[in-house]
Length: 406
Image (cartoon, rainbow, N blue to C red):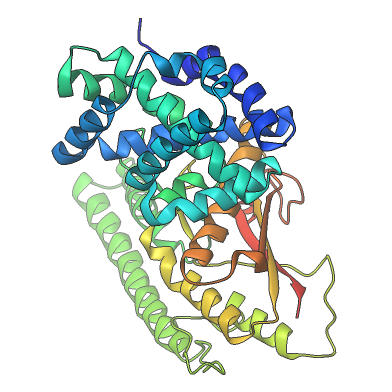
């Protein structure tokens, strides 16, 4: 039976560690427990990511070799040894955190603090306490098995970590999709021309109708010729439609929203009437007050289907929003995530939350102060279109922003 490291952590470490650490840090045990529930999958995800390279796996083995695996099982003893023992644990954990998280440490601390309602210093200390316990637990499981034992063990943890990561953490850490499946693309609030979808079926239908109808009265050759004529006519119409579509596309270029921000940044690829246009107009219009009902929908965000992972094509619009916020430093935003009503409501709620947090974290990574942003997932609540149609469901799968201060 495969070993689940997160279950082992919960059974062997979390309860004792939460109780002892809450007393040491002066935080509530429930808050510390909540924080550890996010910290251990975060650290394990980083360990898995690090083990994906030969040098990273070797570094993990060296890290395990520096720990006293037996003493890490005695949590009460460690905390009972006074401040020197705890400080030693924190020092050991600090080195592990630096190796695993690097310059992402502060972002992780912020997210854990927000998740659990802890002071940032407390979240930092908990990370440093949890790291040696996790690495020590891994070391005990692979004792005598070497690097191959390490990679085999960690490979089996991907699905449990993916489901346990706090909302937004995967995006913050840049963790790859643990499912290993080629991503399908899902556009939020999708739309566009669809005449190509029906062109080929229509051609076939025309051919069949004429061939069948003429077959009883005329020769097969005459019926086939008639059918071919009709096919050619429809093909000509389709070609004309394609020409018109190309002309419309060319015309739409003229409708791009061009705007140079006070910072000097010129928005890229923004459509007239799109989120950038609406947001800048709203910010600059002093007659429009901030309220709880005015939301602006992203129109060029791409996610993997059923996933919170943003695809690279989303960067252009996210960059525009980040630059708008930099140009108007008094503005703060709330980011909302929404799904359609298909599938499990609980899963939809989590997906919408993860997507909202991932968008927020990407904006923070682009230089927007985290204090200016909040994020929330609403699942299938607040639909803007009919969920009984595919077009309506596509419109309901969206990410939107609301100005909370300007």
